[in-house]
Length: 114
Image (cartoon, rainbow, N blue to C red; front, side, top):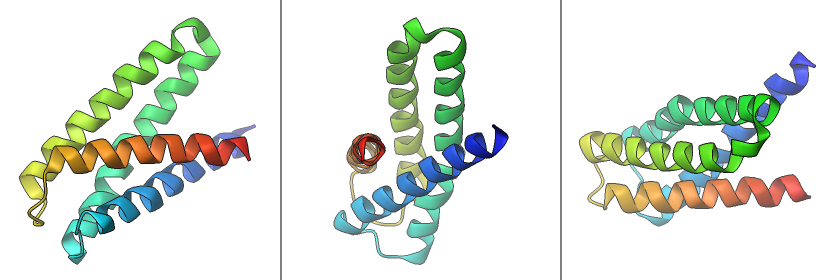
């Protein structure tokens, strides 16, 4: 059971990092520090979102959609703020965060359907 949980966290994080790095690349993110920033930001936000959503799936499945929306919007805002403060690339940090989060969420959904 615990192996499945660890695998779930790890696979969600890996998919998210890969997708968001690809989006960052298309937005012009090329510097090593900016690439590392995208990775670190996702290491901070993704496991928390996955953990809380999984808790709600177990204990209160009725509210999973609501909590998912709240958490994804929160992750988008937090990531946008961090990108605005630390990203070296001259790109709109909230646009990057929005497109990256949208893409990684739906990319993960698409992969989980396979």
